[in-house]
Amino acid sequence: MSNIYGEWLRAQREAAGLTQQELADMALMTRSHIAHIEAGRRIPSKEDARRLDRALGTGNVLSSFLPDDDTAVAEYFETALHLEQQATVIREFALSFIPGILQTERYARAVLGTSFPPVSEQECDRLVVTRLDRAKILEDPVRPVVWALLDEAVLRRVVGGPEVMAEQLRHVIRLVEAQRIRAYVLPCGLGAHPLMQSMLTLMKFEDQPPVAYSEGIHVGKVHDSPAVVDRLEGAYALALGDAMPLKESLALMRATAKDYDNRD
Image (cartoon, rainbow, N blue to C red; front, side, top):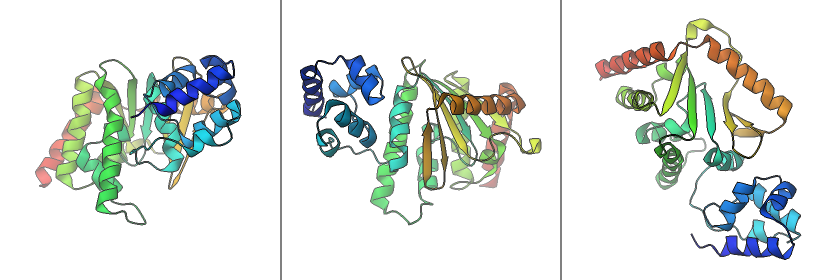
């Protein structure tokens, strides 16, 4: 992507006599995020751009002239998407379906195909590409550290058909076997648990406090209040303590994938 936007941001920051850290503090962002934007490696979310405009006194220039971005996500997820790309640790809890960064193409297409109002095939393609692009963070062999806590209902819900489910579960299994992620299953027999109200993502970073992201139907929220994040981290820890150990979780996923094979 052209770096005219990033170069203009840097020029405005330097004209204001601000370091990257000082601008980051004023715009409630991280220094590394500012550096990535100035270098043309990232596009800020709309909210980030508005905060940069306010911090630099540039009216609405940065928010009005955001570079074209083919990333297709719901507006409420934009901030979480940018945070996800910066996180050093990501802990996911999945209530209904496999977390986005772990989804296969066919599984993602089946999930996104349930949208209402329905989306066109072209729009669905864009959404799938974006979801698969998010998974590229796993190409680094070490970071981010990723834990996935899966409600057993995620394994049992047949998304896209038995063949798609078998493929999806084996994808998660391979990532665990390669020691790229850790995945745990929260058994249905457990009954009620602290995370059963919604999906949850917990993220940690090198240079900013941890945040949490929760999502429901057509709504999502980034939580950065230390008290709220602390409570959500506590709830995650309690649920994780009730989950099946890694070895047993893998065995259940393998058995479930094999069962899907037998349904074809």
